[in-house]
Image (cartoon, rainbow, N blue to C red; front, top):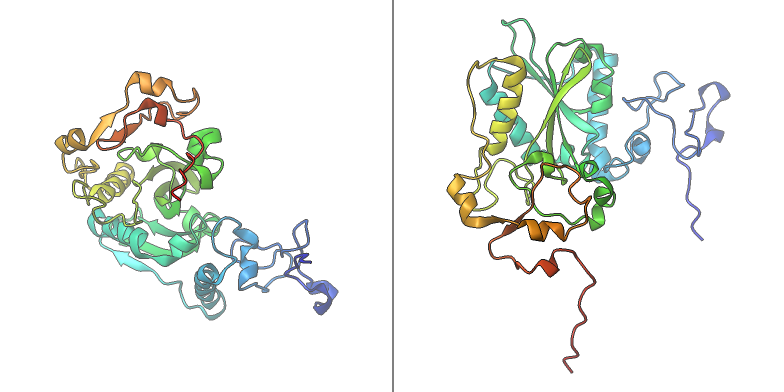
Length: 313
């Protein structure tokens, strides 16, 4: 019989330093920097870090190893006065925008601990100061620190899902089936970079990059794909709020050309759409497309039970 376990053995702690637990008693109650909520200077490392991340991989070695690395830098700053690592970029959006997409494509940390860990980008008001880039911080921690919330221009990039955009159809990621809205990030559900803009701690706006079958947002997914589309999305979004390049517009169209779209994709007809459940497209502006080589039989539009295989014996 397997009855589970607790991550706290209360018998080893003196009463005045016994960690507070969540209501089920299984996990310690932790702050956003993994410090025990009721005991100063006590931290949890390892699988118990999932106490504040129940969605991503903080409960497993392939996830919490990145949390441990982040906590190391936090403790070095707090107790040894060693500043948390920061990368400085010129006060323009080409380099930092490219780095955001490169990080989203190659950094294992924000992939494995998606939604929970993120990168913080500060663009100081002082025009003489460079852009500051901090990697792999808990998003909740960023939004709880005056050094970040006191900034007029703060961007946070992390990897996130968008299933909540699809109502009841997005409640179960394991059975989610949807036509690919390849050109509109507002109509996509799977893991991809999101950049959120905050001003003095208040959320102002966000932008989502486009999905990638191979989770590479910096290269082509298929021959007609525009490899620069996500760089364009990020740079245009940041420029919208800080205007470091007045009047400049980066290309963010998802294909190399409109002709490529007309060649590959065919919108479903109104009759085909009418066969779908009425609440299927809760994001009203999202329209489905079918691949040119995909079956166009309307009967196939709603997934049914798998057909029985004929006995080949």
